[in-house]
Amino acid sequence: MKDFYIADAARFENQVITSSFVVASKQAKPKKSGELYLSLTLVDRTGQLDAKMWDNVSDFINVFDQDDFVKVRGLLNKFNGRFQLTLHKLRSMQDAEVEFDDYLPRTTKDIGRLWQTVADFVEGFRNPYLKQLVKTFMADPQIERAYKNAPAAKTLHHAYIGGLLDHVVSLFQICDLASRNYPGIIDRDLLLTGAFLHDIGKVHELSFARSFTYTTRGQLLGHMIIELEMLQEKIVQVPGFPAEYKTLLEHLIISHHGKYEFGSPKMPMFPEALMLHYLDDLDSKMESMRAHFEREPGAEWTSYNVSLERPLLNTQRFLAKLKEEAASTPCASAVAASAGDLE
Ligand SMILES: [Fe+2]
Ligand SMILES: [Fe+2]
Image 1 (cartoon, protein in one colour):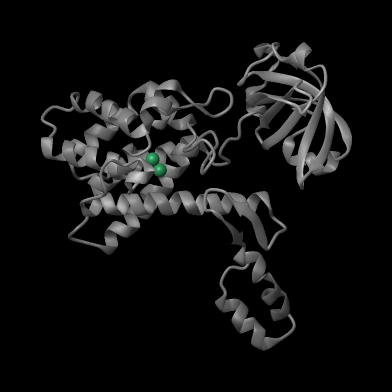
Image 2 (spheres, helix red, strand yellow):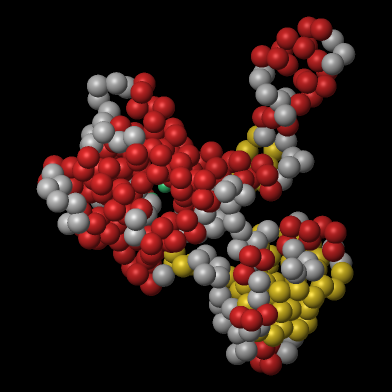
């Protein structure tokens, strides 16, 4: 266990701390004098922290790289409202010194149970080809390990170990509900297979052994192209897999970002593809909101949310006053009841 976690920064303001982190980014920039300083982003499982080294940079610049574990000493203070560490000393750590769980955020849910939820849905598929296809993916031990550990995104949503699986289980549940609302035009098994596959390429797009970064292959191809290749490899293992379904799955994959400017070469052109796009977008945005409220629990209005490009109102907090009033006045209690769960 580390002594200091980034989430506890407020308790250590204006103190010199010694702790260890993963280097998520490392840049050397020139000062006004022309000398170099180091600008780092340090992470642990609770968050990320900007760090600067102003002096003796040449002693340290070559002793570590991005994605390394480092032990540092420095002064923690606030700059423009954000915590920042001014580094005095730094050394890289050996893997043997490192407890990996300290550094990467992880879902609080039970990963085994999430995987079982997916398996239960698939067991209920009526389409034998789609059922066997998803089972073939799930039976591949390499895919299973990666799927259980991958984050769903680098920073925007579900950016934690198990995030991909968490996202897909949530998506299965809302796809299941929404497909019942449109009987006759949604093939539920096709929609759920699309949900299972839509981000599976992240297992190769993102590296997540240390910090979350793009692999070269992910950077150059993106997860959708990687997914087409993964699909091809597994489909040949399902005898007689209909060509029509293969084409539909390929379209579900490449259209799920919904727009050309978000990287989809085609816009969703059939009901399951349209539904997958909107529900995927909905699930990632709801998670982004939930995580932001969790990071700033005391605030009615949050700080600016980068992925949604707006600050957010925490309605539960905003309406909490009503609940307090309800305790004293009978009329307000009806309003509070209609506002639903205020906790
Ligand atoms: Fe995606
Ligand atoms: Fe997604």
